[in-house]
Image 1 (cartoon, rainbow, N blue to C red):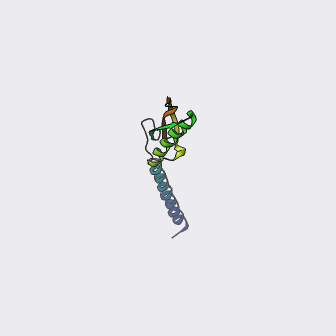
Image 2: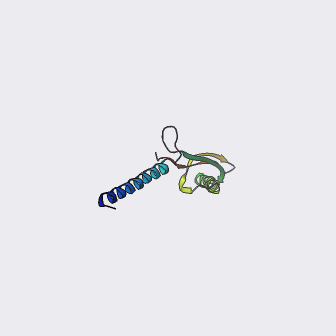
Image 3: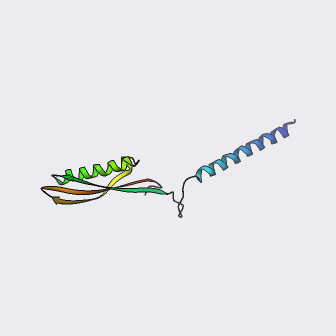
Length: 110
């Protein structure tokens, strides 16, 4: 085998390897779920829970903790969730609260 044919053989091997890398990169990039606008899909869920306390803050904390516990039992990380809303009402010398926790993952931050 002369020098120029050896060089062509190496160049062909490099070209095949490069195209395989490009195809692999495209396959990996195309694996993420994409919505109609080209944005990766976002999963979200909402959890509500009731709580009671003798102060408003204690009642909110109890209801929020219960809602976070529901989300964690469903497989969400606490860092993926936040308290979206609370409804505080006086009740029998204390306060009754309904707290809603919203959880999200995936997609692009925004």
